[in-house]
Length: 359
Image 1: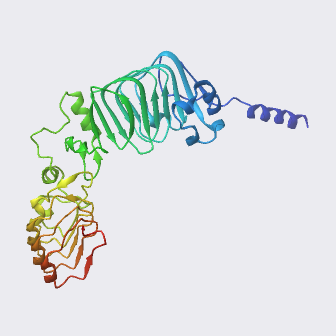
Image 2: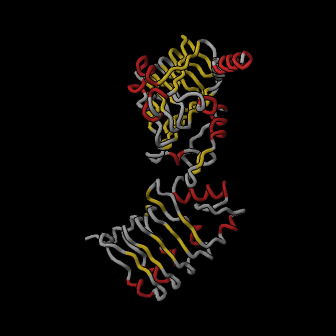
Image 3: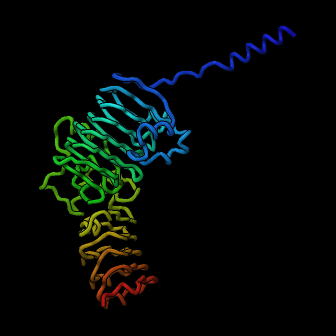
């Protein structure tokens, strides 16, 4: 019995050992403590600054890292290092990050009760609030519909690039490239592919660090045809998910889906009318200047979707499309249809709506 009793006591003591210490990412200039969302709300009014406490669950279970010090220094501040440790980071003091801040995931949120200095600031679906001034040497990059960043003081940054992101800055000398304002197409194609909505962040940072421009030259052709041609030269593929080894292969395709609906006033590129095997052309929501007469060259065309293209007229040459089976014209302010449309002997589907013709 005595042996069993002592074994029980030993087991009980082992179960009462203190939990392992958290291994925090490296920083200097202050000390860190872990508190709950309840205490963080009481001490720092998190909901007023970030408004995200409810996103992370019950305040009593929300983990908040508080780093206190006059000047906190980090090599990097990366979501991949912090996201599994805490929901929110509070810096009570000034923060300097030598390289980059990348908070592109849904957590952690960041509250800096002071000023900020870094080279690159990349944000996504988390929220950031800086109560002081900010010095960002290269660029602020925002991408994520659910995220937001607010900097209360003045921000010194050469470039702000927003991919549908909530960015609140007082940055009077910054060059802005904003997806919602249609200015993303002004970036170099090697940096941003507007068709696939793909970024090359490494190339962007490389050019900025080398002091090279990231904006397209004024002499470059930023029309739809110009973008199309340059894009083919760079990637060699069409605007869907199809891939081509060369422009010659592109000319062999049968189906094209245009997706440049973030700009308006397009001219269809001349390359379209050289597609000898083209059977389907989908321009839905592509705001065209006009449907050119050259469409008659697409003799194998079976499907032509021009829904919501802002077309006021259809050329008589459409009657030359002897193989056309489907013609979609709804959502256009058309004044009339060409008489040649009755020559389309293979036409099985003609889609119009009551708003297709202006009064």
